[in-house]
Length: 357
Ligand code: ZN
Ligand code: ZN
Image (cartoon, rainbow, N blue to C red; front, side):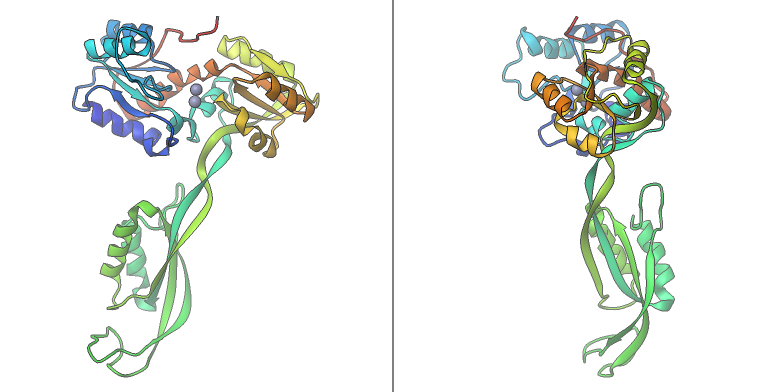
């Protein structure tokens, strides 16, 4: 298997187009045409990570945090440059799956919840997704064929469902002109037709393909159709939410027991029992309002600053600062997702890249 084929599978797990604009994801070092000998998953790519890959005869490292960020102006034997040089000298490829992996329903926050034993999660802060809606008039007898042709072109897909259409009967009228070659009716005569309106949504990225399929399938010379832009909460987003029964102390003990990491700090703004737990892996404090708006009783995240903690306590909110390094569970989580799709050797890193001790 070549790196580009592995890359295609990673893209199906967490599409690289879902990355934030400021991010730097994708193949950061290496060659798409090289043959994959194995995959090492890790939160960060450190010198030890490269050594671990080399010793295990693995030539693809998939890291969550991008090694090259925001920009690297020189590649020398200092800092990040030394790691990049080591990757190249050992012919090891480096792929970063960062915010694209954070924003998936089974992404990093879900992996943290799973590590704690909670597999049933929902997305915490859903992103608004853009869709197009096609609305087309069609003679009643042609609507079945049209729906089938549009479905083949990718129209009417919603989540796990395909062929999702609405239809309703309408009366249409038209008068063919002198040069027209009408499917129904005659030139110069006003024609009334029993038509249906067929409606369905599609991904804006396939618009040209959809219009081509529509014109191809429709019996009219000049099909009447509208294309509307719509926005609604999508299936993807940041963080997860799960149900829980217990106290803050129970939750802290559970986190420490299941992950082997010490909780950094807790903010106890309320002593009510915990029923809903929000998780945002990494640095989630800028999304705190969105998390508590979903009815969370506590937020698990990292990088909590003093003033953020102060304000949270004043607002009666509970926070558990698990540390940003809690995201390291993605190494095992991503290994499982890759192995679900590919029969290749995947190793979750054994080396710790936690800068705190
Ligand atoms: Zn992350
Ligand atoms: Zn992170």
